[in-house]
Length: 569
Image (cartoon, rainbow, N blue to C red; front, side, top):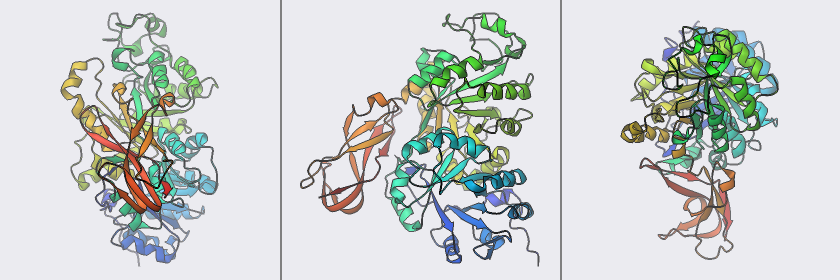
């Protein structure tokens, strides 16, 4: 007998009361369960279910012997990850997801079966995709291109591969990372992963609930909007400002690319030259490159307009600073196909930095999917701004509405938001992470109007505490001085009260080790007592993390942590 569809609509499939116990960790990793046997299915209906669940789908559409229909019916509090192991599964699964209006799920295949993932993603483009790289030792630098060329925006890694540096490198390229917990949930969490596969759901939730409000276990990517303008020291969208972002150790630099009338890609945001160049107002895309390059920037007479290829050639010497390329032709003069083809040519010429990300707004025709399909080796982000941006969601239902609309538009891409129009909040970010949506936000553009920052900037900057994956800002100088990690200084003696000290780790590696700080103590296991003066006493073997509370420039604070370590007294 045919059962009625699982959901009344694709939108209805997003109506999940995902289990989220009170947790002070901003952008906490998702708690993931993997179903390997029929007994494992009981976790879906337990009082503390996983937030994501990995389901190995057989060709007959069963999971551990149980019909997929029934398993998904039990996923009312979890987002499923559907693993495909055989080609014959794809057509039946595609028909199943369409007939049952399943939109809120993630496709997955192993690295050995990655061709299956590309095929499945092509037939089910509404779903997001994940590549399971367990069992191999991938070259981290090559992994983003490998993943996105098969439709994936997230990967599963072995713990041995998932170092803090590797995780950050992937997140710089908008790739989410899921890790198994063989080394312990605390170790993986402290390295900043997006999700952890665990066999101890209760222990995972208890670990996350042990942190105070305002804690963070993941490094935030700091991206220089239009390059690093450094409070007016440099001008926007130039080779100078993008190189400055690299030399000041940003995690990325965003630029805008338009076409001239004679089809030269140039680095330019505005539709015309007003306010940027000392000349009569001219429309950028109606002007030749020769004319534009003869202009001089207001207050920066040594700067003109830079070619896109020249910038990418210069940035080849800074491979650890990805360039976020916003393909930004105006709606009237879009030339999207030509600009995409020329971008491909520049990135493949052997002279350019290839560690880059593409960005595109959702309104331009032929749109994001066309561009992404022509640049399959480049991770892509979709950005939304202007009057179309909705209000920040106030509850779960509002988040689901927004996520459904975004997921339909951005399958295969990350998500960008412009909080000049709205501050997307922590609630939205929490629900987005279970869908493997990499959320990056823009701050307001205060460089040309610094007085406005004094009025509204601090309130806008509070979005920094919402746990987004990346923060794209015009005033990165306000954030560069914050440490990003801690390195514990281990005591020489453990038979007396121990003073917790650490070295602060900064984006600028030249500063690392030069700054020592007293830390807090976060006990994990063993007999450990923290005294009122901040020292602690260990009896036997104890496991702990050090913490450091940072005061932010807008008045709030948050706390970062070291990786777990052991002391034996």
